[in-house]
Length: 342
Image (cartoon, rainbow, N blue to C red; front, top):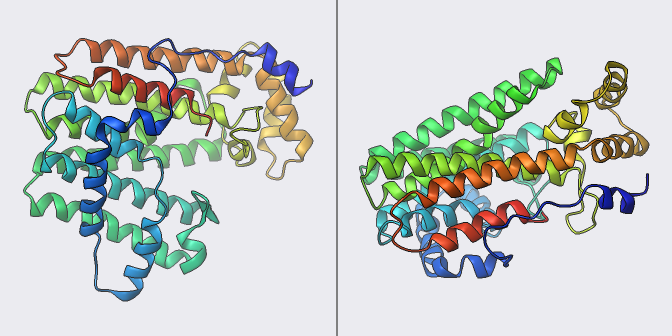
């Protein structure tokens, strides 16, 4: 089926909360704090080891969207003035996140990251592993140096969950027995746990209210699940804006769009698609047929519906809290997360 027809068959479900804005517009209320965070982060990774300093300077040029530090800042801002503790929390999370990305590139043998050649391509795998270890250790040391033991506990728990999720995904991928239940367990651990830590660390930096802290953690978990569903949907996209690389399909990763598309199919129909997904070297025709199958059988629409369920749950939880300021700004960031093209 022609891709234009598929797009008409699977309309994009729009979120009703907030207005579409650019990320720059959304983050404007915390831009000054993000600038301060960047300076603080740069100071923390400073080193006199020449080769390490060279790699770090290269790394600092690769500024991404900064979604996670922004979540920390916006979470804190809703319940009190942003403090030095907030910058410490954002830095710890960014160190952890960056370390996991570098380790992922080594494991996946990736050649690029954010449009740059990956660390492991330029400095080899050993340097990539050691740099990731260095960043993780710096995150621990920042917490200890500032006696931020509660933030350290939150981040340590996130690291544990992320590691368990990665290992669970490896086992499931090898056995090729992904189910919807396993999928949500994996993305809750792998992705949502860190987003939850962003929100929890942000509010913990400005208030000790346990109800607010726990509720914001739940807000982050729901946003994180929606974030990962969106990532998985992008791999099955049809427009040229995001330029989908079909990495999940090429790497034989069964994600929610395919799971939902398979639900109503006969056993024979499921086997045919699963055979294509199991192939280590897929032809362009194999990939096209898998994408068309997902679009034709409701995989996109049903995944979008689940994504919106989690987003709306996060919004409901958020609006139950005594927010001082910035509620709409946070909602706009949530809207951006599920409406982004890349």
